[in-house]
Amino acid sequence: MKFFVDTADVAEIKDLAASGLLDGVTTNPSLIMKSGRPMLEVIQEICAIVPGPVSAETVATEHKKMLEEGRKLAKLARNVAVKVPLTPDGLKTCKALASEGTMVNVTLCFSAAQALLAAKAGATFVSPFVGRLDDIGQDGMHLIGEIMTIYRQYPHFKTEVLVASVRHTQHVVQAAKMGAHVATVPPNVLRQCFKHVLTDNGLKAFLDDWAKTGQSIL
Image (cartoon, rainbow, N blue to C red; front, side):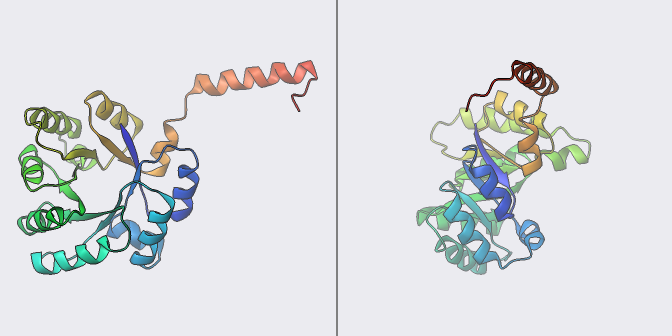
């Protein structure tokens, strides 16, 4: 499974990229707002840090303007994946951009039927939002299972399932068990994947015993 981080915080991205764990980055208008910086500047900076796909979202809702925005974003760097909503105009834009060789991330997917349409439109990624489905009493991970089952029936589909709206580490583990291609996670959730109380306890015990030896490696 590939790990993308879901943030527009450049400092966070630099820190996580140093671990070698990052395969890409996803952003959206809300994350850009939190950064307090100009969108195009932020996207260019992130693309220079992470060689993998960096999702940059259009904000137009009508196809013609969405396509113009998508083309402008795609020119920022070779690793930009233009993000479009899963709407009729968004899928038209996806088809056009994909035909031009641009990576496209179709976002705000909440059903298997929508994911099927995204694949047929040539999306590079489709982003099902598991956490938001959980919020309304549905099973977000069940949707991932449905999409993976459908995509496996059609080997000519090249669209990767990018699990989004990840709220905790179990979302990541469950998505990996289902064979999802990518999980995009907030920085705090990615860091939670490191944590286990037995790891902490074991490290403390080793260090305490080492201190008692009075030795030094250096």
